[in-house]
Length: 113
Length: 113
Figure (cartoon, rainbow over the protein chains, first blue to last red):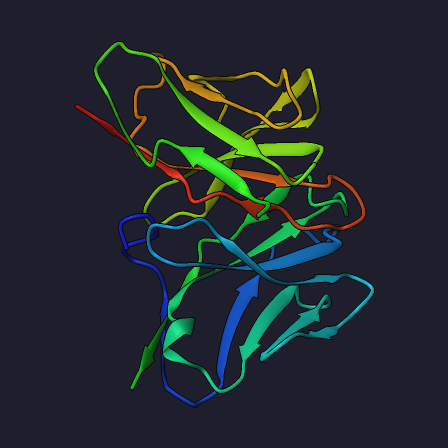
């Protein structure tokens, strides 16, 4: 879409498969992390968040994993559906209050039938 | 229903003209934010406000101005000093505490005539 990156990393998965989207964050002091989904022409939509005192959190069809040792965050989507096609952003926050988020550049997820 | 409303969806600016983007929220959130999104990049923070009548510069505030006279409203003015204003502008709000995520509007696309 015109409002998200034209040259983003792209992950292609088949419908029904599981998707794993990765994110390397920059600040070892960050203690709150969020995943957003952005569809073309729309604003980012909150998916799931996790605090640094956790290493895993599950939602409906989604799981976020946090590895503070290597500053890595991942989003797993189970049984990927065509409606999951979008750009996914991770964001980190050092304040713990989501008042100063730093966003990654995003990953485009394409779901093939 | 509660949410964040941005208007207009599309806006065109002539050279030397100031334009104002509207953002209204009825979520009773204390904090509000403005971001700029360019292709191939993540969201970059322009200005944010954690309380009425107070706001702070973000990472790319030059050429922009804001006001926060009401809790529900946080308008952004793109001034003629902003030499590259063509972008997708996103407004967000949050509780501003306790690890609650930012929620976004559906953006305004600004283009130069």
